[in-house]
Image 1: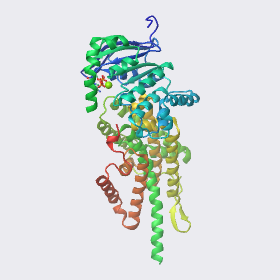
Image 2: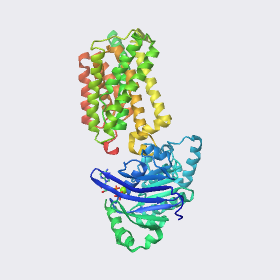
Image 3: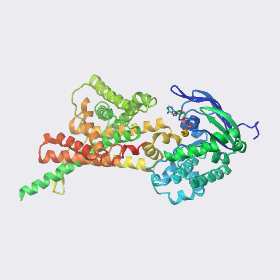
Image 4: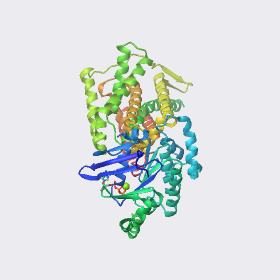
Length: 252
Length: 300
Ligand SMILES: Nc1ncnc2c1ncn2[C@@H]1O[C@H](COP(=O)(O)OP(=O)(O)OP(=O)(O)O)[C@@H](O)[C@H]1O
Ligand SMILES: [Mg+2]
């Protein structure tokens, strides 16, 4: 990637505390337009905290975040208006609302109401199953469909940058594969993606560049294809480590 | 034969009265439930909004000499603003610091006492009657029963306002956002909703609906600073219907209004409150989540 360009998102020395607990201890990362960047790390590394701090749901202790060189707002609704949206961990779809109502909520901040219909069609072409179920209550969808809905809902604000917090969580491998394929397609339609994942292999296979987060610090960064064969990464996140965490996930 | 028809007439009359009273309860219960559904606490200051509405209407009629339409509009807006200010002053600082809704409940009890006492101090504790701006003349219903114009009017007004609320919630962008927030406020924020503005809108609507109830209740029972205590009935109705459920609040209110009026008509007026609280106890024993209640685990 050409380093002279202004990054779409630049996080500099971000620190976040929960009371006495330091969840992020100075994280810096850059995401350039058009990229897919992943952050991998195990339970409690601070991945969700990073996402929530960017989107403005969690307050920053210190550090700066810039979007296209301009300071990013601190309040959630202003961040969304600046062109970032988050697919939260655990999907968090609005179960008692219908699929189409969920998607309409995703378009909440938009003022160009006439174009919302086109974007509805756009997300339906990405996820045709949502179209078939558009009148159905979101709570009745399967786990995979709910994840598709959460992604489609986040796209309805037409973000420049899409944040994803563990989209693979609790899904069968075949569905994970489908969803990651759609993410690549979304990226090809000019949506930059920052994804955090415990499922390191899938995330590295999908992304161009990656960061490894460990107890609130970035310990490693590089091109994803290099990280995939990096001995430290394979030992801690891919090989036996990955199977262990997959087992733990199954148990819970 | 004559006794039978007399019994039927009383029954019909009390049903109308019950629907009328129940629909006023519904206006109060719905606002209260709306706040509960978004912030998950029982706002005990809700009765205060009703009193503000009653006094605002009284002042507009008596002091400003406004007509009932202008006075009602001022009352609704006034109570709505007081509700928003109450939230900003007393609840917002708490909900921004903690997720423990018990603190909100306690703050609301405090605000309820504050509002009541502000009226006692600045307006006085005596009972006031609104000028006769709402007709109370008897109306014959197809020769079957007689009721008062007031009961019919309060029933119609309640239906109109509840219908308007329903349209707002189902057909508008902010209405959708409120329904989403009632399920998950945080995630509504993720969608780019200004959560503080949403909460203010909810309080404004709740306060304005309480004011409508307040106007009708002050005609029915006269106006005094403790009139807000009557919201305990609306709370009971909301619990019977299922906390946080708007259809539940309406159905619970109607049940309560009918139960009260039928008890008054056929047994004794003094047993009204006993019946109300018996209904509450039975609901809590049989179905604690209320008729339309969601299981708490279903909420986030
Ligand atoms: N609301 C909170 N209050 C206190 N501590 C928290 C809170 N949320 C997270 N933490 C702590 O901050 C650290 C980072 O948590 P975070 O949820 O960001 O991790 P994560 O990488 O997303 O983990 P997972 O893979 O399990 O989702 C953990 O030690 C966690 O216990
Ligand atoms: Mg997480």
